[in-house]
Image (cartoon, rainbow over all chains, first blue to last red; front, side):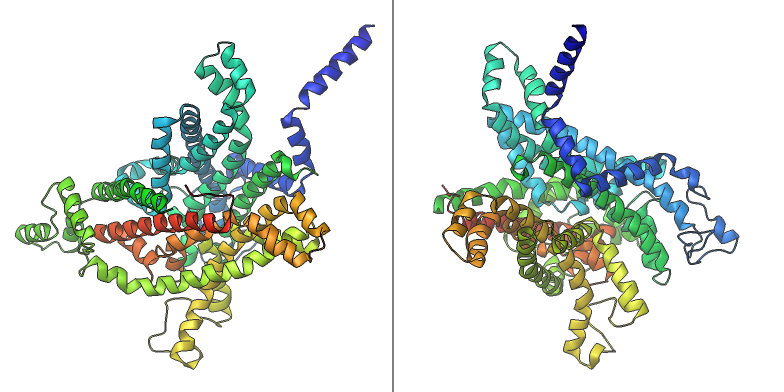
Length: 303
Length: 319
């Protein structure tokens, strides 16, 4: 008797957990590219946290120069070779992983926070806020963002020198990356706002805040997750571009900085190739993961 | 239609004012250009500095300067570059090299990208499709300029087949002729720019086609005996092309801005390269000029794209 009751319970539980998320997860697991993306992202997260352990040299070390081992092609001692200036590319690339992942995730976090709030408010309340949002999005649309970042890092050069360079770049990227998210969230909210369950909860006396954050925002989560994954990829590429152009934090090791060393000295091809591949694979990882989640959540692609 | 265009044009005014004033203020906050001049030449007397300041109107408050700039802008004058000469001349001199590269890359990537995207969608999960999607996702995951560096390492530094920098030879002509020489200089940067936007177009076309070819009307067209080629290219593609058009529209709008990173890697004398250089040197009038021109171009490109939607897609009605 009690046994049948417990099976009944588990059945009920199972049925409840076969939600949109469970279905999506099952479909993601069958998507090979998505799983590869997830694996790459997890591997990089591991490197960002513990990569320093595998690095033979501390960040920014020029020890190979004193050992007369600068400008060397890859070998067992220096798996990615050394730069003309005498840095071990492998160690620097590992230390950069932490820095670049930090910038990209903080920036994306800021963008998601602003984007979701602005988009949800604009979509839900419409009118004035909506008009302002559309205008702001339009402005961000036509701005060449790279140049703004260059000018900003010039304004806050003192912060860079004081060691807040990475955080500053992350904040700037975050402040400029949100309009796309706001735009997408607004569109979704407009759709959901008209659905019957919203009318139902309003007639039950739910406040606007409750409707917005308990009922609407959770339903907008799928597109937000997809776009966050793709935005992290974009932010990594932007950070690499900024430090490649020499506007990054000179005190922090980054992939862009390594690429700049590679460009200054073309014959040391290993500097360019290996640090570039580090960038390619993490961006690839986030893109594959984003695509995978997007496919898993898209009902129109269901077979 | 005319009213719609008029409304869009009026809407451009506040956006334009916002973009130009924000750039002006940020540029102004990023440092005093005269101080930089002083670092370059410590023997400049204070009197000379005052004269220079007055020449560039730098002695006036920033909002006055902005309105002076705005007044000149509407007369078609973008001001004076700190490096000498007018901004109009500076931009004019670099426009051709930039557009040559950008337009070639956009046209090539559209011509190659759409058929590849359609092909890939029609054979979803075939070996060819997997190859194409893999190449495409690598294309959108690479830092553009890194791809440029790799090409330079392979084709210029090692094989020595192609030049790595500049838009034309000064003393030595590749392939023995000034015209062929310009083409030789274009090849590597064009490959970089084409590959990147090609990858994007292929992904857009493929993703949209996959949704469209599953719809009933495509099945109906097939069932009514239309050849596959007509079903796909005449009926299905029309329904899948709009995001691609948006992308192409924006690309043309941004074309004048060049590709700052690619141009820097190839030392390509274009507006993108100049833009970065001007930002580095705090040559604010040039930064301001190029930013504003890009903004205006993008706004018009957007408008044209939206109008084109109305023509190509009868579901979109322009009211």
